[in-house]
Amino acid sequence: MRLRYLQIIIIMVTISCFGKSFAASEVLTWGGCIKEAAKNHPDLIAAQEEVKQSEASKQETASGLFPQVDGQVSASTAQTSSSPGKSTKADSYGYGVSGTQLIFDGFKTINDIKAAQQDVSAAKQGFKFTSTTVRYRLRSAFVDLLKAQEMLRITEEIYNIRRGNLELITLRYASGLEHKGALLTAEADLAGADYGISQAKRSLEVAQGALVKEMGRSKLTPMFAQGDFKVRDSALAKPDFELLIKNNASLQQLMAQKSSAEFSLKSAYGNFSPQLSGEGGANRTGSHWTPRGNQWNLGLVLSMPIFEGGLRVAQVSGARALVNQLAENERSMRDGLILTLQQSWAALQDGLENVSVQDKVLIATQERSKIAQAQYSIGFVSFDNWTIIEDNLVKAKRVYLDAQASALLLEAKWVQAKGETLEYE
Image 1 (cartoon, rainbow, N blue to C red):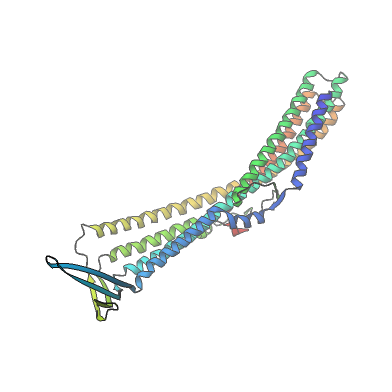
Image 2 (cartoon, rainbow, N blue to C red; image 1 turned 90 degrees about the horizontal axis):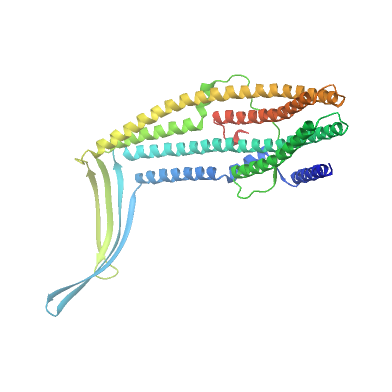
């Protein structure tokens, strides 16, 4: 008996020390996590760089409409032999500028620029889609940490319940009112509660690590999530799903990609058009530096594709097939988004109702436990019936927490289905 009580004391001291560590931990709010993730998350940074790449690519394409000017400086020497033992050496120097200006190319460059503009829009929508995904993962990690913290508290409550039960059964066993099987069962229940605390601590550390990752941090530090299990975006009234998908980032990204493909198709048709460019240049040449011989040129160049083995026809065919593919992808995504919204909304409503049901179950179980414990202490209830009621209480506490956390995760899924970003809050 002394050993058993010593074990109890050690465990309670451990719990107390762990509880004090929460006080020394960094307190994280949901809003603070959003701000940190928006600044540091690698996926968001990568998506932002992709936007910059698309903008640079658009600028590169647009440069084709401007004059292309080159400058050159040259110096050379040559030696020729006119007869054995005799040679002539000649030096040549020159410098100048030359330029070309596109005049007409069947609107190919203009359509390429428009396609690049749509690529920029697609990249920006891709950034929003990444933000939506990051928000869901961040919210899930935050909820998991809330749940892990609450689970640790519940396991401590369960331990206290099991310890109290063991003390009561020990007294009854010592007085001959209870059998040894009941005492061993109570001891096993206490050991299970002890294991539950150890498991909860490990789960808490894993949840902290997940939240650190989703905030974009590189190092795990002690932290405590400050929040509750209240669902705020409950969407009790069934929304208009068709209206919700209009601003969905993934759909907008695909629509921009389709628009880009349509302009690329027009650009491919422009390959069949003659290309007209203006050329000009001025330079000086001579046999000494600085050269003084003047030379200039100015003219027009017209080029026209005649035969390239079906290259341009194949390019048009491929561009048209891409447009058709993206159009069908858009239709499929639109239908899929509506279905996802319907499923997410229905699941959220189920989760909210389940929380309400489990709350009532927990209240009833707690009341039944109080009554059963009083009845057992005076011998009105058998050990077998009483332990079933106590087990139901332990189960009800866990199930209620699971229901609360599940409802928050379903809310996060619903928000993701709507396409909301980190700025949604």
